[in-house]
Image 1: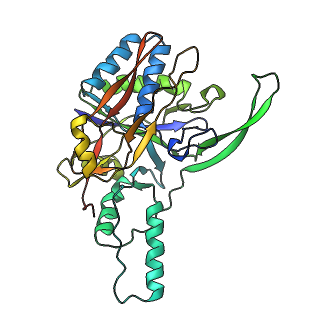
Image 2: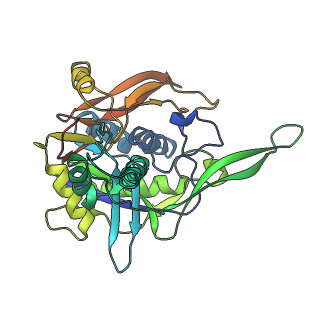
Image 3: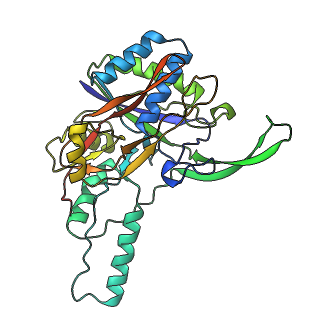
Length: 336
């Protein structure tokens, strides 16, 4: 059993649909959910006629021998350090301003709390410090994370009789920044096998507007096998968090589709839902998948959930699946 980290560098801008913000071509996200990544892996293997690899991917995922995280941000720091970021825990914050504080002190602390709520990602090695500050009622120091920039780009639709302009939202990663995947592999030997699949998918790209060159990537470095004494500060911390199954809070780092008997755990947790849709890859006519509501990464629960893969029917004789297997890290702190 191994946890393997794959750092990805993007060779072009990305357009990842922002369903939580109403969707549309003009909006884009920076991170990429695990269910969309799994669909991209399956679609690319099918398009490349790698049916044996596709069957193996589905079999391993259904058997729990392969689990994927969302694609999350990484960044090269000064020196040779690499920072790996995790979602900010979606826990209810019970801020209480200190009694007897001056008006100026109260305003400063309230402002700090507002900045803290806007944090989307934290370094893996700083996650426990964030939870300690949160549980003690202190504001966490603001950490500016500059991974790239979002922008609008004008494109031209040449498929109609009259060419028409339109706009596409895109995210350009800064040099020395990208996204990383953490994979749970029951068989350590599958690390190279998954690397080959990612390399294949990277040529075609992921996300929207791939026909315009968006979403292409390559592996930034060799896969990192996570262990107690890691290479960097953050991959060491990430391993400890992954192994903390007894921690009082378990935070999802992949979108989860709970089993029916896990709904009670969701109801007891602190969570946000995401509507997951998208198009079916490989069909001759664009066809949309049935939308499914999934628990978003960053949601926190008292224990880990297994999640599931569900069938959404067939297209051109091939089954369509929605990946929703759970992937969690353990964190300290109470849900107040």
